[in-house]
Length: 334
Image (tube, rainbow, N blue to C red):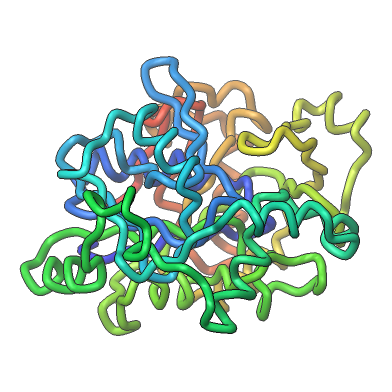
Protein backbone atom coordinates (compact mmCIF):
# COMPACT_ATOMS: atom_id res chain seq x y z
CA UNK A 1 0.00 0.00 0.00
CA UNK A 2 -0.69 2.84 1.12
CA UNK A 3 -3.21 3.16 -1.78
CA UNK A 4 -4.35 0.04 -3.58
CA UNK A 5 -7.13 -0.68 -6.06
CA UNK A 6 -8.96 -4.01 -6.22
CA UNK A 7 -10.29 -4.80 -9.71
CA UNK A 8 -12.04 -7.93 -10.97
CA UNK A 9 -10.37 -9.59 -13.93
CA UNK A 10 -13.29 -11.15 -15.77
CA UNK A 11 -17.12 -10.91 -15.57
CA UNK A 12 -17.38 -10.55 -11.80
CA UNK A 13 -17.68 -13.21 -9.10
CA UNK A 14 -13.89 -13.43 -8.81
CA UNK A 15 -13.88 -13.33 -5.02
CA UNK A 16 -12.98 -9.69 -4.51
CA UNK A 17 -14.84 -9.62 -1.19
CA UNK A 18 -12.59 -12.33 0.23
CA UNK A 19 -9.42 -10.50 -0.82
CA UNK A 20 -10.66 -7.16 0.51
CA UNK A 21 -11.68 -8.60 3.87
CA UNK A 22 -8.32 -10.37 4.21
CA UNK A 23 -6.37 -7.19 3.47
CA UNK A 24 -8.50 -5.19 5.91
CA UNK A 25 -7.62 -7.63 8.68
CA UNK A 26 -4.03 -8.42 7.75
CA UNK A 27 -2.87 -4.93 6.80
CA UNK A 28 -4.99 -3.12 9.39
CA UNK A 29 -6.46 -0.80 6.76
CA UNK A 30 -7.22 2.78 7.67
CA UNK A 31 -9.78 3.28 4.86
CA UNK A 32 -11.84 0.95 2.69
CA UNK A 33 -13.80 2.77 -0.02
CA UNK A 34 -16.57 1.12 -1.99
CA UNK A 35 -17.22 2.30 -5.55
CA UNK A 36 -19.80 1.09 -8.07
CA UNK A 37 -23.37 0.30 -7.17
CA UNK A 38 -25.83 -2.08 -5.59
CA UNK A 39 -26.04 -4.52 -8.52
CA UNK A 40 -23.02 -6.54 -7.37
CA UNK A 41 -22.44 -8.27 -4.04
CA UNK A 42 -19.14 -8.93 -2.32
CA UNK A 43 -19.24 -12.16 -0.33
CA UNK A 44 -17.37 -12.31 2.96
CA UNK A 45 -17.11 -15.40 5.18
CA UNK A 46 -15.94 -14.95 8.75
CA UNK A 47 -16.39 -17.25 11.75
CA UNK A 48 -18.62 -19.46 9.58
CA UNK A 49 -21.01 -16.58 8.85
CA UNK A 50 -21.72 -15.39 5.32
CA UNK A 51 -22.17 -11.71 4.43
CA UNK A 52 -23.38 -10.75 0.93
CA UNK A 53 -22.70 -7.02 0.77
CA UNK A 54 -24.09 -4.67 -1.89
CA UNK A 55 -23.33 -1.39 -0.11
CA UNK A 56 -21.14 -1.69 2.99
CA UNK A 57 -17.45 -2.16 2.10
CA UNK A 58 -16.06 -5.67 2.58
CA UNK A 59 -13.38 -4.28 4.89
CA UNK A 60 -15.94 -3.98 7.70
CA UNK A 61 -14.41 -6.98 9.53
CA UNK A 62 -11.67 -4.74 10.90
CA UNK A 63 -13.29 -2.50 13.55
CA UNK A 64 -10.55 0.11 13.08
CA UNK A 65 -11.14 0.58 9.35
CA UNK A 66 -13.04 3.70 8.24
CA UNK A 67 -15.66 2.61 5.69
CA UNK A 68 -16.71 4.94 2.89
CA UNK A 69 -19.09 4.88 -0.07
CA UNK A 70 -17.52 6.92 -2.84
CA UNK A 71 -18.79 10.09 -4.48
CA UNK A 72 -19.17 8.25 -7.78
CA UNK A 73 -21.23 5.44 -6.29
CA UNK A 74 -25.01 4.95 -6.22
CA UNK A 75 -26.76 4.36 -2.90
CA UNK A 76 -29.79 2.13 -2.44
CA UNK A 77 -31.01 3.42 0.90
CA UNK A 78 -33.06 0.43 2.07
CA UNK A 79 -30.26 -1.99 1.24
CA UNK A 80 -27.71 0.24 2.93
CA UNK A 81 -29.60 0.21 6.22
CA UNK A 82 -30.14 -3.56 6.02
CA UNK A 83 -26.38 -4.00 5.77
CA UNK A 84 -25.65 -1.50 8.52
CA UNK A 85 -27.77 -3.69 10.78
CA UNK A 86 -26.19 -6.90 9.47
CA UNK A 87 -22.61 -5.73 9.96
CA UNK A 88 -23.24 -3.61 13.07
CA UNK A 89 -21.30 -0.63 11.72
CA UNK A 90 -22.31 2.77 13.04
CA UNK A 91 -22.04 6.33 11.74
CA UNK A 92 -18.66 6.77 13.44
CA UNK A 93 -17.17 4.10 11.18
CA UNK A 94 -19.39 4.31 8.11
CA UNK A 95 -19.54 7.32 5.82
CA UNK A 96 -21.31 8.19 2.56
CA UNK A 97 -19.85 10.91 0.37
CA UNK A 98 -22.40 13.72 0.20
CA UNK A 99 -22.32 13.65 -3.61
CA UNK A 100 -23.05 9.95 -4.07
CA UNK A 101 -26.29 9.57 -6.02
CA UNK A 102 -29.47 7.78 -4.97
CA UNK A 103 -31.33 4.82 -6.48
CA UNK A 104 -35.06 5.33 -6.03
CA UNK A 105 -37.90 2.81 -6.29
CA UNK A 106 -38.93 4.27 -9.63
CA UNK A 107 -35.52 3.32 -11.02
CA UNK A 108 -36.02 -0.31 -10.02
CA UNK A 109 -39.50 -0.30 -11.55
CA UNK A 110 -38.12 1.12 -14.81
CA UNK A 111 -35.31 -1.42 -14.79
CA UNK A 112 -37.62 -4.40 -14.36
CA UNK A 113 -40.07 -3.13 -16.98
CA UNK A 114 -37.44 -2.55 -19.68
CA UNK A 115 -37.55 -5.18 -22.41
CA UNK A 116 -34.06 -4.18 -23.50
CA UNK A 117 -32.62 -4.72 -20.04
CA UNK A 118 -34.43 -8.04 -19.68
CA UNK A 119 -32.62 -9.24 -22.78
CA UNK A 120 -29.27 -8.09 -21.43
CA UNK A 121 -29.86 -9.70 -18.05
CA UNK A 122 -30.20 -6.77 -15.63
CA UNK A 123 -30.36 -7.46 -11.91
CA UNK A 124 -33.42 -5.22 -11.61
CA UNK A 125 -31.97 -3.02 -8.85
CA UNK A 126 -32.49 0.13 -10.92
CA UNK A 127 -28.85 1.01 -11.45
CA UNK A 128 -29.13 1.78 -15.18
CA UNK A 129 -32.05 4.21 -14.89
CA UNK A 130 -30.42 5.84 -11.85
CA UNK A 131 -27.22 6.39 -13.82
CA UNK A 132 -29.24 7.88 -16.67
CA UNK A 133 -30.67 10.48 -14.29
CA UNK A 134 -27.21 11.26 -12.96
CA UNK A 135 -25.90 11.86 -16.46
CA UNK A 136 -28.88 14.17 -17.10
CA UNK A 137 -28.03 15.89 -13.78
CA UNK A 138 -31.48 15.34 -12.32
CA UNK A 139 -30.59 12.61 -9.80
CA UNK A 140 -30.99 13.05 -6.08
CA UNK A 141 -27.77 13.02 -4.08
CA UNK A 142 -27.01 11.62 -0.66
CA UNK A 143 -26.99 15.12 0.82
CA UNK A 144 -30.64 15.47 -0.26
CA UNK A 145 -31.79 12.52 1.87
CA UNK A 146 -32.49 13.35 5.56
CA UNK A 147 -32.19 9.73 6.68
CA UNK A 148 -28.58 9.63 5.50
CA UNK A 149 -27.53 12.78 7.35
CA UNK A 150 -25.66 10.94 10.18
CA UNK A 151 -23.47 9.22 7.58
CA UNK A 152 -22.72 12.14 5.26
CA UNK A 153 -19.10 13.16 4.78
CA UNK A 154 -16.61 14.58 2.31
CA UNK A 155 -15.15 11.21 1.37
CA UNK A 156 -12.82 12.66 -1.24
CA UNK A 157 -11.17 14.96 1.29
CA UNK A 158 -10.98 12.21 3.91
CA UNK A 159 -9.17 9.80 1.63
CA UNK A 160 -6.76 12.34 0.16
CA UNK A 161 -5.96 13.82 3.56
CA UNK A 162 -5.39 10.28 4.80
CA UNK A 163 -2.95 9.59 1.98
CA UNK A 164 -1.13 12.82 2.83
CA UNK A 165 -0.72 11.43 6.35
CA UNK A 166 0.60 8.09 5.11
CA UNK A 167 -2.54 6.13 5.95
CA UNK A 168 -3.51 2.99 4.05
CA UNK A 169 -6.41 3.12 1.60
CA UNK A 170 -8.09 0.32 -0.33
CA UNK A 171 -10.38 1.25 -3.22
CA UNK A 172 -12.95 -1.48 -3.65
CA UNK A 173 -14.12 -2.07 -7.21
CA UNK A 174 -17.35 -3.92 -7.97
CA UNK A 175 -18.29 -6.27 -10.81
CA UNK A 176 -15.64 -7.43 -13.27
CA UNK A 177 -13.57 -5.62 -15.86
CA UNK A 178 -15.24 -7.45 -18.76
CA UNK A 179 -18.51 -5.75 -17.77
CA UNK A 180 -17.03 -2.28 -18.31
CA UNK A 181 -19.34 -0.08 -20.38
CA UNK A 182 -16.36 1.16 -22.40
CA UNK A 183 -13.47 -1.29 -22.20
CA UNK A 184 -14.67 -4.80 -21.46
CA UNK A 185 -16.16 -5.88 -24.78
CA UNK A 186 -19.40 -7.71 -25.40
CA UNK A 187 -21.50 -4.54 -25.59
CA UNK A 188 -24.46 -4.25 -24.94
CA UNK A 189 -24.08 -7.11 -22.43
CA UNK A 190 -22.25 -4.86 -19.98
CA UNK A 191 -23.01 -2.70 -16.97
CA UNK A 192 -23.73 1.04 -16.92
CA UNK A 193 -20.28 2.27 -15.87
CA UNK A 194 -16.58 1.65 -16.36
CA UNK A 195 -15.37 -1.04 -13.96
CA UNK A 196 -11.63 -0.72 -14.62
CA UNK A 197 -8.97 0.30 -12.11
CA UNK A 198 -8.71 3.88 -13.37
CA UNK A 199 -12.47 4.39 -13.05
CA UNK A 200 -12.47 2.93 -9.54
CA UNK A 201 -9.89 5.52 -8.49
CA UNK A 202 -11.82 8.26 -10.28
CA UNK A 203 -15.10 7.42 -8.50
CA UNK A 204 -13.30 7.68 -5.17
CA UNK A 205 -11.67 10.99 -6.09
CA UNK A 206 -8.13 9.61 -6.06
CA UNK A 207 -5.73 10.77 -8.77
CA UNK A 208 -3.77 8.15 -10.76
CA UNK A 209 -0.39 9.14 -9.35
CA UNK A 210 -1.65 8.45 -5.82
CA UNK A 211 -2.30 4.77 -6.54
CA UNK A 212 0.58 2.51 -5.49
CA UNK A 213 -0.80 -0.93 -6.36
CA UNK A 214 -3.46 -2.37 -8.61
CA UNK A 215 -4.44 -5.86 -7.50
CA UNK A 216 -6.31 -7.74 -10.19
CA UNK A 217 -8.40 -10.62 -8.87
CA UNK A 218 -8.58 -13.87 -10.83
CA UNK A 219 -10.62 -16.94 -10.05
CA UNK A 220 -9.26 -20.37 -10.97
CA UNK A 221 -12.13 -20.71 -13.44
CA UNK A 222 -14.42 -18.09 -14.99
CA UNK A 223 -18.11 -17.41 -14.34
CA UNK A 224 -20.66 -14.85 -15.40
CA UNK A 225 -24.39 -14.23 -15.02
CA UNK A 226 -26.84 -12.88 -17.57
CA UNK A 227 -26.49 -12.81 -21.33
CA UNK A 228 -23.47 -12.10 -23.48
CA UNK A 229 -20.37 -13.97 -24.63
CA UNK A 230 -18.36 -16.34 -22.45
CA UNK A 231 -15.49 -17.91 -24.41
CA UNK A 232 -15.01 -21.61 -23.66
CA UNK A 233 -18.37 -21.89 -21.88
CA UNK A 234 -19.24 -25.37 -20.61
CA UNK A 235 -22.70 -26.77 -19.93
CA UNK A 236 -24.38 -26.59 -16.55
CA UNK A 237 -24.12 -30.38 -16.35
CA UNK A 238 -20.37 -30.23 -16.92
CA UNK A 239 -20.01 -27.39 -14.40
CA UNK A 240 -21.82 -29.48 -11.79
CA UNK A 241 -19.57 -32.41 -12.57
CA UNK A 242 -16.43 -30.31 -12.12
CA UNK A 243 -17.73 -28.54 -9.01
CA UNK A 244 -17.76 -25.18 -10.79
CA UNK A 245 -21.49 -24.49 -10.66
CA UNK A 246 -22.31 -21.39 -8.60
CA UNK A 247 -25.26 -19.19 -7.73
CA UNK A 248 -24.77 -15.43 -7.43
CA UNK A 249 -24.62 -14.26 -3.82
CA UNK A 250 -26.65 -11.13 -4.35
CA UNK A 251 -29.32 -12.13 -6.89
CA UNK A 252 -29.54 -15.92 -6.73
CA UNK A 253 -28.96 -16.17 -10.48
CA UNK A 254 -27.13 -19.19 -11.84
CA UNK A 255 -23.60 -18.52 -13.03
CA UNK A 256 -22.33 -19.78 -16.36
CA UNK A 257 -18.86 -21.34 -16.30
CA UNK A 258 -15.72 -21.59 -18.43
CA UNK A 259 -12.08 -22.61 -17.93
CA UNK A 260 -9.44 -20.04 -16.98
CA UNK A 261 -8.49 -17.91 -20.00
CA UNK A 262 -4.77 -17.09 -19.97
CA UNK A 263 -4.89 -14.67 -22.91
CA UNK A 264 -7.77 -12.70 -21.42
CA UNK A 265 -6.03 -12.66 -18.04
CA UNK A 266 -2.92 -11.15 -19.64
CA UNK A 267 -4.85 -8.58 -21.66
CA UNK A 268 -6.90 -7.35 -18.73
CA UNK A 269 -3.91 -7.17 -16.41
CA UNK A 270 -2.19 -4.93 -18.93
CA UNK A 271 -5.17 -2.61 -19.48
CA UNK A 272 -5.68 -2.19 -15.73
CA UNK A 273 -1.98 -1.68 -15.01
CA UNK A 274 -1.93 -4.56 -12.54
CA UNK A 275 1.11 -4.63 -10.26
CA UNK A 276 0.08 -7.88 -8.57
CA UNK A 277 -2.69 -10.45 -8.70
CA UNK A 278 -4.84 -12.55 -6.41
CA UNK A 279 -6.09 -16.02 -7.31
CA UNK A 280 -9.22 -17.29 -5.57
CA UNK A 281 -10.87 -20.71 -5.30
CA UNK A 282 -7.71 -22.62 -6.09
CA UNK A 283 -9.14 -25.34 -3.86
CA UNK A 284 -12.07 -25.83 -6.27
CA UNK A 285 -9.73 -26.86 -9.08
CA UNK A 286 -7.24 -28.58 -6.76
CA UNK A 287 -9.11 -29.84 -3.66
CA UNK A 288 -5.89 -30.79 -1.91
CA UNK A 289 -5.21 -27.05 -1.54
CA UNK A 290 -8.10 -26.47 0.84
CA UNK A 291 -7.09 -24.50 3.90
CA UNK A 292 -3.41 -24.21 2.93
CA UNK A 293 -1.62 -21.15 4.32
CA UNK A 294 1.83 -21.69 2.74
CA UNK A 295 2.77 -21.98 -0.92
CA UNK A 296 5.04 -24.93 -0.16
CA UNK A 297 2.01 -26.83 1.14
CA UNK A 298 0.29 -26.78 -2.25
CA UNK A 299 0.34 -29.88 -4.46
CA UNK A 300 2.68 -29.70 -7.43
CA UNK A 301 -0.05 -29.33 -10.06
CA UNK A 302 -1.48 -26.32 -8.22
CA UNK A 303 1.96 -24.73 -7.98
CA UNK A 304 2.47 -25.26 -11.70
CA UNK A 305 -0.86 -23.61 -12.48
CA UNK A 306 0.05 -20.53 -10.42
CA UNK A 307 3.47 -20.32 -12.07
CA UNK A 308 1.92 -20.67 -15.53
CA UNK A 309 -0.49 -17.79 -14.85
CA UNK A 310 2.41 -15.64 -13.63
CA UNK A 311 4.51 -16.53 -16.67
CA UNK A 312 1.80 -15.85 -19.22
CA UNK A 313 0.42 -12.66 -17.65
CA UNK A 314 3.69 -11.18 -16.38
CA UNK A 315 2.04 -10.39 -13.04
CA UNK A 316 3.07 -11.95 -9.72
CA UNK A 317 0.30 -13.79 -7.87
CA UNK A 318 0.79 -12.63 -4.31
CA UNK A 319 -2.50 -13.72 -2.71
CA UNK A 320 -3.99 -17.21 -3.16
CA UNK A 321 -7.38 -18.18 -1.79
CA UNK A 322 -7.65 -21.75 -0.53
CA UNK A 323 -11.07 -21.72 1.12
CA UNK A 324 -14.09 -19.51 1.82
CA UNK A 325 -13.03 -17.95 5.14
CA UNK A 326 -11.38 -14.52 4.99
CA UNK A 327 -8.13 -15.95 6.38
CA UNK A 328 -8.04 -19.06 4.18
CA UNK A 329 -5.29 -17.52 2.11
CA UNK A 330 -1.64 -17.81 1.16
CA UNK A 331 0.08 -14.42 1.36
CA UNK A 332 3.22 -14.31 -0.82
CA UNK A 333 3.85 -10.58 -0.50
CA UNK A 334 7.27 -9.48 0.70
